[in-house]
Image (tube, rainbow, N blue to C red; front, side):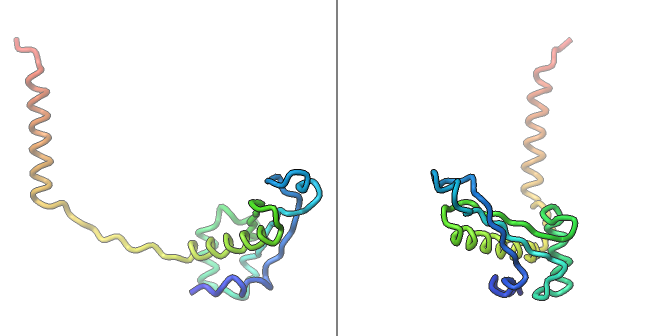
Length: 134
């Protein structure tokens, strides 16, 4: 089970910069873009098994040092972008720790196999009737 996003706050650092999103002249003055940085391997909140699972699932999104970067620049407000980045972070961790449901092997029914073979027979007869007779 994953702890709430607030448990990760001491391990997360935020960096702000100027956003390229909406805001008009405000964009040139205010740093509303938020970048969330979290070091997976240094985390005290997660167990080693959870860290390993996240490392496997998020391998493409982590830097070589094991740093996860999430940016948000959707809103004009820096505070709202910070909340969005935290929500994305928590959702990403939840998805990476979710184990897929095991697949149950199934077999086609006898009637389904019979219907498929009948369809193939009809199709082959149709093609055979098109052949030129000599």
